[in-house]
Every structure is written in C-alpha cells, then in structure tokens.
Image (tube, rainbow, N blue to C red; front, side, top):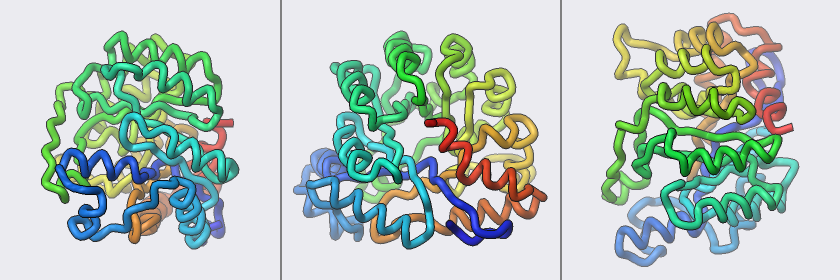
Length: 304
C-alpha cells in the first residue's frame, strides 16, 4: 500500500521494463564491446545472468515503495524466458509481457511457447522500432493467437519512440514514425474485438488520435506511463491534468492503467512519476474510487 491524497491505496504498475542480462548483452553486441564494459558507460547496475536475481531485486524494490504488483516487459525480442522466469518465481507480484517483432523468423513459435507457459500476459508491438505496419498480416497471426488465450492483451507502442539507453550508448535508432499513428490500430482493434489493446503514454504525442481510437473501440486501454514529455509538442502548453481530464472524459476511468516506465537500477521504481500523476489526478477532483481503478483495479481486472 502507498500513501496517497485519498489515503493508503494498493498500486499496480502497468509498465516496468525488465532489463535482463540478455537485454544488455544485445546492446553490447551492437556496441561492439563486452557486456561488462557497459557499466562505466551507463553508470547502471548490470544484472546477473540468472534473471531470478533481477526478479528478487524488483520484488525488494516494489516492497520498499509499497507497490503491490507490476507488469514486467521483456524489452528485446527473444528475451521472453527472462520474464517467464521472474513471473514463475513471483506469480503473485508480476504480470509478464514480451516484445515481439512480427517480421522476424520464429516470432510466432516464440509467442506460442511463451503464452503456453501461462506466465506471459501481453505481446508488445513496436511498429516504428521494427518498421512494419500494425495492419500487417503477420501481426494478425499473433493477434489471432492472443484471441485464443483469454486474459491476455496486445500492447502497441504509438507516437514518439525514444530509447534512452540507446542514446546513452551512442547507438543509432533507425525508427520509422510512419508506423506510429494510433489511427492505424482502428481497423485492427475492430477486427479483433475480443483482444484488449494497451496503448502506452497516452499515445506519446497522438493524444487526439488515441482518444478517437478509444472512443470508437471499447477494447482499447491507455497506459499513463513515463514523464509524458511528449506534451511539449502540443500547442497551448498541455499539462498532465488536462491529459487526464480528456482521457477520463473519452475512455472513462475503467480503461486507464497507471504505469511508471521504470527500468534500471540503481534508480529502480520511479516514484516521482507516481507522485506527479497522483497529484494531477487529485487536483482535477478524481475520487478515491476512481483513483483505485486507475492505480490498481483496472490492471488486475484486465488479466483476471
């Protein structure tokens, strides 16, 4: 439980990146260095190869802040096993997400195996990162797979995509924003009405478009994660209170999922994001009942 303006509430974080040893090994390979050489470049704690140690570290970190549950994202394709290991060790604390690249050989087989484990609840699509359309039929095959597994979801990143660790390492990010518009998801969400879709960061710069999507597709949810720095692109100096007002007006309180976008140690869980978002919600007059939905109940119900 965390102390909030509404009293002590349970909190479930819908967006935590599980930066495993394999994640860093992938970056080191791209950088052309040994994985150990990333430590002085990033000034971060690199995890052990055994992902169970990282899982325990996250449990300790969440306990320290009073966070009840968290969704862990395997943040590079092919890393599902790290999150599966974490969830199997702490099933009462974590929901497992895995990144998929539908254009890669073996993507379907990997997703099938991961979902069959019972420890992966969401497939994460990053169309701009991997340069494909969310309307690609290879995506459709994976969505059909999700449709056959109740209690799962499709996480679709839209809008501005910036990967801080790649910037810190001087690695290029050849992303293609042609594939970033939430409107592209409209026909897909209608076609797969039985699948729940999660769009993070309020659409990351496409607020108007993602709200239109939510209005037309009741199976689309928004995750509130990160600092939402995309607001600086908006006219009239959009602030977080206005974002929450508009999202609540269109999507309603049952389709907002609180998240932080936490990722690395030693920073750990990003409490500043929680404090900023809970303050904004309180200042616009959100009741304790609605706060409980956004901060905890909606995520738990999504995967119940």
